[in-house]
Image 1: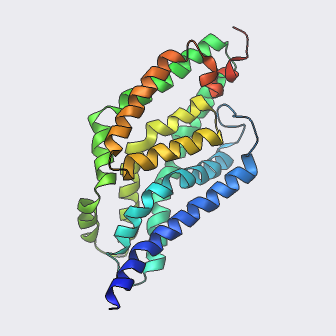
Image 2: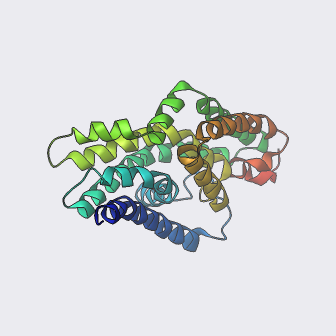
Length: 252
């Protein structure tokens, strides 16, 4: 009679902790950036501050969809579960923190586009939308998404990892697949504006639906098609990309 409650706790405890961490990150982001206009580029932050904010942002956006995988991984751990799950989660976030380095470089470059005439910024925005649209329809996206949607095979792989570095290796490995799945969606924030909380919430919903919803693959493809449509529509409505066009208010 005690086996089932124990199994439930093993599954729901880590998921609840990741959801709580994501909620805490959202609270900080809303408290710090809520009510502010979407900002271009790196938000005027230097590299260390940008990486800190980027990591919190990715924690808020990615951990909700990662919680079920963490719960599944936790069921493979029999001793010292809590500290080992902390290692798994930190290693996962380390991958996204590392991705903040090229994101910073991209932000610096695209931030300059916001100072260009609207037509030039619009062209850059169209390229951003098109990149995501095309990537969403590629086999590589499908492969990475499949690993996130059906992680049983990954659990078998992680169980074979020897030694005390197992949890860190598992977190990094899963983080790499997650990055491969979602990097182009994160690039969209360059068009919508850094710290655009509405855009972040919408992308979080997309990421979660892609990974957890029964029709997740269809969601990914629909988002790809929608991004390609935006790549065309932004020439008529520059305000669709406020992070690169200033909301369409600058002069041409």
